Image (cartoon, rainbow, N blue to C red; front, side, top):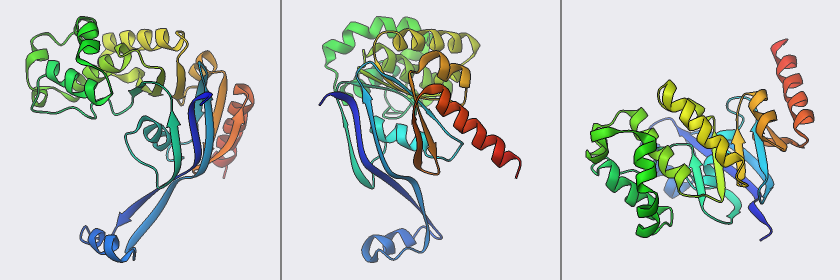
Length: 245
């Protein structure tokens, strides 16, 4: 496998049911009493080693769905995704945590789900503790955390796990202003460390700053895949044209 990420003919559908019990009928009869939403439609995409790819598009275009699929948070309806190396997912930062376990135990729990050994986690534990700055809460059950505190814990594990692939979806808003500054600095450090990156953002400035290629997703399909400036120009022209309608 020559690339860090290889996506082939990827389709993701969501189903919205009129009534909850219609789910059971659909499972057995495949007769849908509701709405079928195609979030991604036959996407093919490669991300090379050490390549930083910006993912742009309007809200609802399918960007976040693509990121979650590559990160393994959800699964495709059709098609394949192959990745090489450990993935650091800076989306759904609290996903995989157990609310009944302490922050410390959750690092071991989720870290092992990510394929890390206990020794791997031992080696980064002090760095995470210093970075997330949760104080006494670190050894309390996660159900006592605020959503921001849980996100900080997930962010710390993701960035200190030494990922080969980084999946970033507008993560710079994590926590309070002090932690936002820390998270942006740490993410930027990883961006410059030769990781393979999928970075979704609505900020042209950040896309220009970090990415060497852009993928524009429109209505669940890839409308453009190439030069950053050309991709941003196409996207902004579409936004302006639609805004005038």
